[in-house]
Length: 99
Image 1: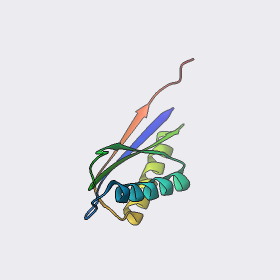
Image 2: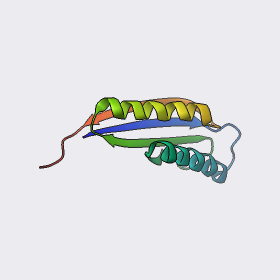
Image 3: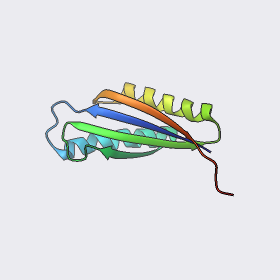
Image 4: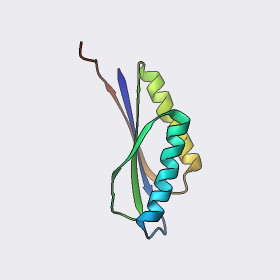
């Protein structure tokens, strides 16, 4: 079992409310879920108006498949995001299910 995590850190220029932040977050989360079937959640800076941190997670049988899916997700975010992507990171974990 291979677990891949893509962390995305955005700056929301000119945003002055959590409602505006939520709108951007929901749009990105829905695009990632619909396009790549990723689990997506806001994971940091929850009360900050001008910063959004999302984590997208996927699971697969092969490292290349998981890495490819996360790379495609990052490409989509870079092309479609209204916010400025200031940092991104990918982590891959290999685990074995309990038998």
